[in-house]
Image (tube, rainbow, N blue to C red; front, side, top):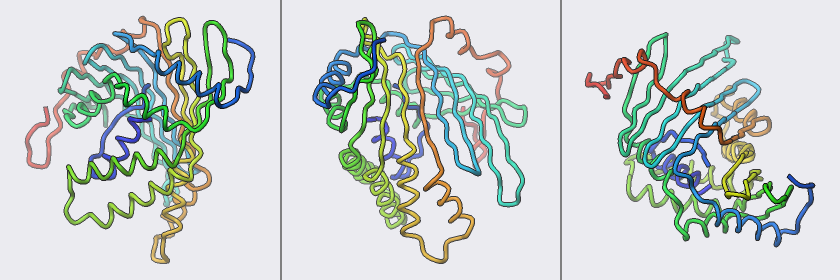
Length: 310
């Protein structure tokens, strides 16, 4: 969630980043004090392995659109690799469906990241230094201070299962504390990267996000292996964030707002879902991250000035 806070701040300040949220026993409802103690024990004991292979699935659904980011990734030191697909479906205002599926590979070593993707049956490649910097920050091991911040953003923890080998917890987040953290990050990013002429829009968007977060019911379910304190699965329900932000925009909308945009905002406000699911994989899945030779021959994307983004 600390990464989500930082990304939200960077997004509002104009830096559009691409990232990912990474991360028995009979069921029983534990009192919150007991649940918080179990959560603190788990997050404090969690050790980052030298190498980890995981699958990430991000699903966004509304009545007229659906998007899914599904990929396998691996981290080892300062090296990150990923392979997957970005799928998108949209029912346009004309009644025609737009259905896209974009396969991609990512390879990063230190500050150098390359993104390979296929469109129109042709592979292309771009460099992404901003995304690389964000990934490095994400992969960094949290400091004790950052761990305390993560814990302080938790409102309630319920132990769903607990055995000698595994523990599953339902973690509810404190919207007000997260909103405060996001606001502080936005202000920091705005000071470091001012965007002239967009101050009013930025303040308005910041207000929508702040209202949405404070009124959202956000939670995630975390299963951890108690023998080595490694994450087994983690699933986020972020639907409340999207719905809350959309409702804030609707409340502020005037009569000049396009009817189609109003319909989209209403769909987002009441019928949208945003869920994220992560799980670790066996070492054998690593071979799926190897980039095919034809992909490595991808044509670099040229910017508007005609120079290649290698």
